[in-house]
Image (tube, rainbow, N blue to C red; front, top):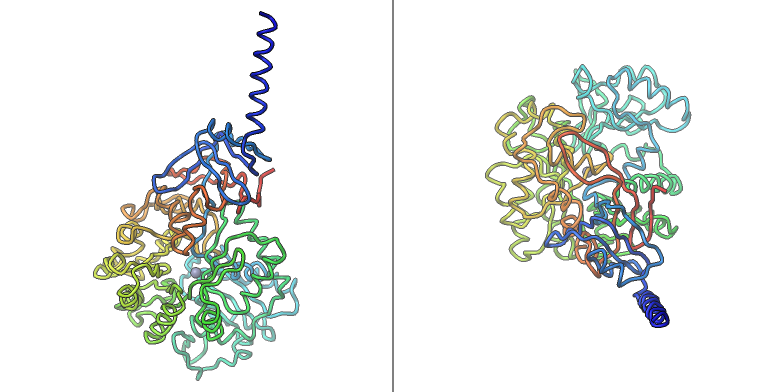
Length: 543
Ligand SMILES: [Zn+2]
């Protein structure tokens, strides 16, 4: 008996050992997790195996653990696992430039801004002073500022201060002189403000192109360093992809350089500004892919922003009857770019905030939809839409690309600008989703905070993260819809649904284990990634 028992034990042991050795070898298994796949059935599983950057299998705990042996086995201790989040509308380059310039965010008065400028000026004695992020709606005096006091402080040094929306800047006289802007300067699709026959220093939209030559030129090293810092920030939030909303020709080289260093892992879907050089690039390359950089779209600016009266409305602003806003690109030019996009197999992603800008853009997309139903053309922001135009989103297959935090930053003052009637169809994310079936969701960083949990909170709860009155709660979307907007729908919005956006066998192992449960409740709670993988590579870990 004893011998028999012993033989039995040995044979069980050897069976176990051989089954271990027979286990299929993979790079990594994450188990004891809540794996939210975001697939068509919204499957939630316990374990996931991946190898050489691709997902091999997702399934129940025992099934995965029995079948695979892994170089790295991670016990997620019940934590949530999601596909890596995408920011469907952000500005890495602008954010990098912001990091290299004077930060004026959260200045609560013009005086505070002056203090920050003086401090920055003494530390950076040579270059033109560039500040970013002021927002006069936070000041007790809510009018746009003028440049007199800055002229007194800096008579011989150029100062350029961008408003938070980047659609307006305040320049001192020295900067105006260097940019050769005077009372006679004419500009299409922009404004050079004149008050009592004097330049106030405020310029907006296309007028900003006039100051490009006086801005300090940052080196590739400076920009790369800043972008890698931003990448760290993104990865710690579980953001593994960004739709970069508007780059120029020289920026393509910068991103290729960054990728070649082996340090830049973010999936970057870049929209090209429709400049002649970029159009030639697209004509030559068509849809372009260089490792984790993908280019298949043009960004077109139909109008400006509501805050600075630049968004193009069908009728005048309710608190400024003298203006309807500004059309930044003529209808014919938008149409020309649309036809080129169609020819190159590109998307046209149009910044359209006001109802008239949306109307005009929808007109153009209508024609494209007649020949190509799967064009996936996007309207970026889609903030104010006339009731008669809303259904066109569904009819013409337009992809709304929205930023829920904008609604919460704007609602303190936006009712004054738009009036009650237009508010009925403003920031209507639920209605847009009903029309289109999918929405792409982003933050517009650095205009808004990069934190995707702020996006979740504002999209679902429709209150600012610091609390306060809810805003158009009926237009809130569910947690699941919001996450889809940052994962699978965002992937669709960038022609990448076969590679990313959901956790399914064969797709990229681009995923995040979050520190805390991913949820939305009435009060905002922060959350961060515990571990972030891009194509199977661990790119961030709290350890
Ligand atoms: Zn933007």
